[in-house]
Amino acid sequence: MDFHLTAEHEKIREASRRLAADFATRATQHDRETSLPIENYAALKREGFYGLTVPKELGGWGTGFLGWTIAAEELAQGCPSTALTFNMHVAAVETIMDDPQVPPRVKQRTADLVVKEQKLLAYSITEPGASSLAIGPSYASSVQARQVPGGYVLRGRKSFLSMVEGCDYIELLAHPAEETNPLVGVMFLVPYPAPGQRVEEVWDTLGMRGTRSKTREQIQDEMVRLKSRITVSGGGGGGFGGFRRGGGAPVITGVADASASIETDSENLVGALRLAVEMLREPAFSQEDLDQARQQRIAAIESSRSEPQTLAALEFQRHLSPYPRGDVRYSGTLAEQIDEMKKVTLEDDFDISTQ
Image 1 (cartoon, rainbow, N blue to C red):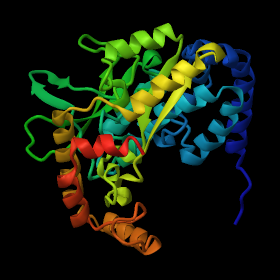
Image 2: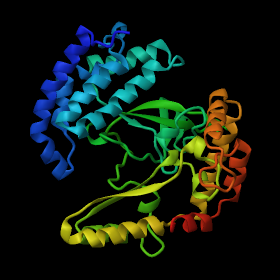
Image 3: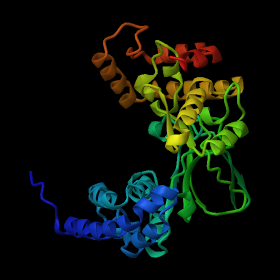
């Protein structure tokens, strides 16, 4: 097998290295100010990188995922933030181009948007309680799309919307309001900015909704006092099965966990750590939040019963993890996962957060 890069791949690498050298002159400033590298996106536009993964027959470079991987590796040497955030544009384009169910006219319109009109796309899948890591046939979006004369009205919340301040369009997944099946989803390209949109700089994850002793506003005030920025996020694809000891959801959602990212100075480090611990150990989580998450998760697991790929992955995981039920490493059957989800209570959530 020939692992040498093609002439076109070499061209991409050289262009990416030139861009990275320029990005490096501003990387420290953007990192220090937590600012978006808008000028770097403009440079990527000038080089034609917006259409890097658009097929050649639609007007793009047609480099595919390998071409972007080569570019990302080089761009990250100059500014990791640029490579990471621009990856969302690539993901948005690839989602449309690679899906055989997307009509050719939609692919062409998207290609024209990013190649001819040079529009930057942000990619929005993750929601409070549902991660983009779990995207697939079993993903249920809580964002509702209601059809009206001339288009749609979307209502709901998304999380982790990287690069939104610099984008021209947001590609997002929503559930058609008229559909009774919660797993039905439609991709929308939404202009940004537009009336009715609101961006909150604080992620709306469990730890950011407040704690048992502080409201969201009090947490924000405390971070201002401490001159700190704390963000709390959860792993495991957004499922809740892993929160219950002995739960069987890891094969679908991954092993659930939570972590905090802290930006502060040495003088306020101790206070910021104490606040982060409180946010992790005492998250404010209502019964309504739990019921909604439970309903979405059970629906997703139920749909997996007819997915050969999911069933095969489950059996493979069970073979690799032959631990008894009750062990934290145990991988349960789909029926066991649903049973565990039905048993989860708020007390389980708070109990596991202290471990």
